[in-house]
Amino acid sequence: MHWIRQPAGKALQWMGLIYYDGSVKCEQLIQPASVTVQPGQRLTITCQVSYSVSSAYTAWIRQPAGKGLEWIGMRLSSTTYYKDSLKNKFSIDLDSSSNTVTLNGQSVQPGDSAVYYCARDTL
Image (cartoon, rainbow, N blue to C red; front, side, top):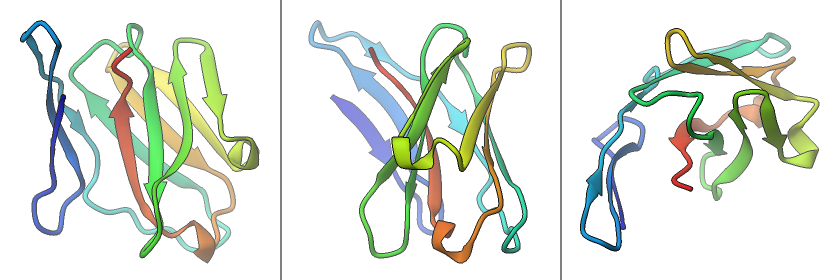
């Protein structure tokens, strides 16, 4: 079972995971509260994580206002997966020395306005 919270006016925060055997795993993912980009510019959002980015996939997900969640992609080391319709728009970079995962968006448009989340894969 995953525990997630969302403080008022802030992004979702993954609090922890309770495994079937009763053990608990907690990680921290920190990203900016907000990023503003003008149309046509490059989007860069960096997520600082408490786990090794070389040991687990980190995903990026977005949620446009009034709409559902949309998976953008995920990366572990040199292996990256993207949603087909977004693979030419976004790229995901890792820095294992600082345990950061960065989402880069090319030539963003008003239609790219959304709340963007980084998330750790649990598999």
